[in-house]
Amino acid sequence: MKRSFSLFILFLLFTATACQTRVVSAQKPLQPNSLELYERYTIQTNDAKEFKVQVLKQDAGKIYAKSKSGEDVVINKSDVREVKKLNVLASVVIGLAAVAAVIFVPI
Image (cartoon, rainbow, N blue to C red; front, side, top):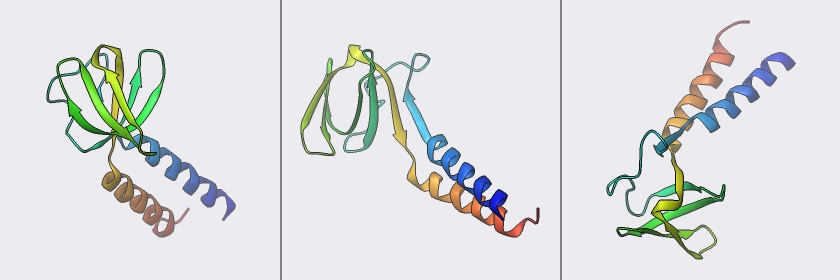
């Protein structure tokens, strides 16, 4: 029982981190339509700072966003290294599938 519980926890951790979609990276550069307005993203800059924000507006050189604490964040597009979007629905579905597999598949 203890072994299956540890496997269950491992599956949950894996699915929670695996269900982030990489929108912008070194292979997929930032395009004018890469980010959807009013969606939540995790933006990592070239100096390794991470911002968990909701994108409010974009122009040619900057991204205007609001953090969870309510403060306004302005990020230069040239400083963006990576942008990830959390896909909550996929995380829930994969987590439920992992739980069902642990419960119904005999070990």
